[in-house]
Image (cartoon, rainbow, N blue to C red):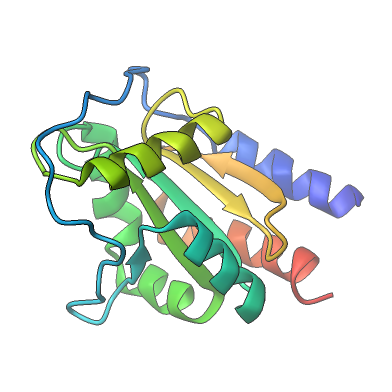
Length: 172
């Protein structure tokens, strides 16, 4: 139990959410429902359905990494993507140990009203106040910690903390 608290503290210390606490933009014209983002280039597979991602994390005994983002307007969100999530070492780690969920609040990209509502519900459930916010859950959906964009964070530090959390909460 003490180790879990340490992991939460470490993740919290890495935590710096987007300095602008902006609210999600209003709904835009409806578009076809998107439930999954296929792994196009073989790197990351971001799910977009919370319940499905939770179920997969539980059945595969993996951590669930939830990214709350404004993918097309939030500079720190774009930097987190560029500096951590787009790196091959993170993609390799994620493929083996994580289920990824993107909860997006874009301004220019169309999402269906259904997807916008689902994203808003998950953001409200986890008390999201700024972007980017990353929340990590264990396979039983218990929160382990959260972080945001930190300049220079890099995939190595994120993987180190995630691996410690995984070993303490999954590989028991």
